Image 1: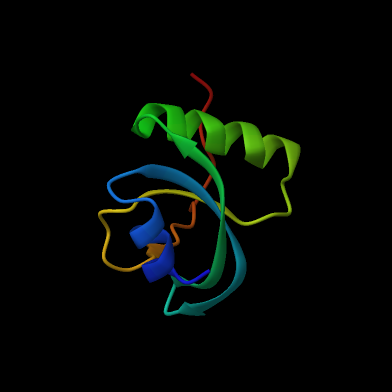
Image 2 (image 1 turned 90 degrees about the vertical axis):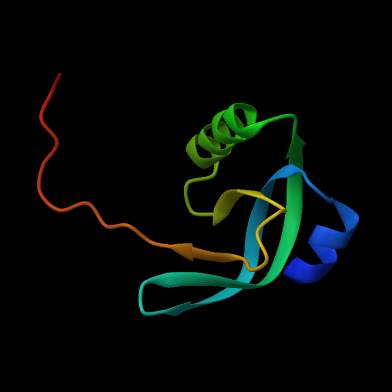
Length: 86
């Protein structure tokens, strides 16, 4: 599905989507073909579902996103350095 189709089918919703086909533009992830994996009641539930799915399927490209976004463009943030233990 295209992002426009997802937005029309799931208006004003938090979703977990999987990128079937995508490309990158200057560290920005752009979804070309996506599938909806799960609809969530709110952002916290979407983040929890994303974490769960990412642990089970680490090689797959999941994104949690709200359909109010006009474009499916996600900036990739790379960690620099080492995290200190708390």
